Length: 240
Image 1 (cartoon, helix red, strand yellow):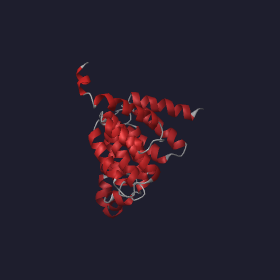
Image 2 (cartoon, rainbow, N blue to C red):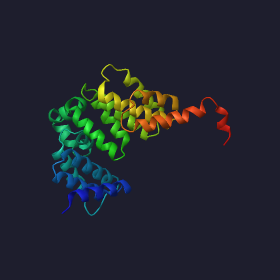
Image 3 (cartoon, rainbow, N blue to C red):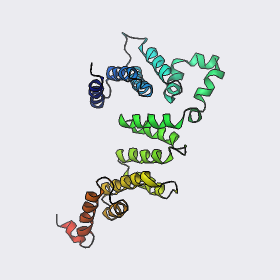
């Protein structure tokens, strides 16, 4: 009787046990019940992926049921195109004119907002490569370009590729469209990346450009403190 609590519990469960297909399926049904069709399709697809990797002899038709769910909830989703060849190869062969518009140009058929929403969902599930793939589609849209580039950098950071993430954001800041609140968020994320790489001078410089943003005053103070002793007296580095 407490759907929000159930969602929170399931979210923790699938984070702790990413191979728990029943949890993904249950999470999908909860999201479907509250009208989150894109989120539900994503959870059902993950359950389907796990079920195909570890088939259940007691429920041989379950994969087809899950595929039908995904197709019903998100017919234009790349998730459908992903599974179509597995579940309807004969249909594709016999009715190519029907299948082609869905599977041939997914980047054009699916709106950028759907790609972006899927990317965020994948990222939150820890599926970072899949998330980056969705953001690469959504960044082709003028409206979602900056946010998508920022999210790709965040994914790279979470994968430990801080240098690549920094380079992405440095380029993004040179874009004339990078203005206002989004530019502040990008500078902040770049500052965090510089901190992670212990590039204190660069971190301090970028934080100085957004002095009142979020917890920047504390971070700027910390970056300056790290920078001050390390740069004029590098011999201290050998003292420990």
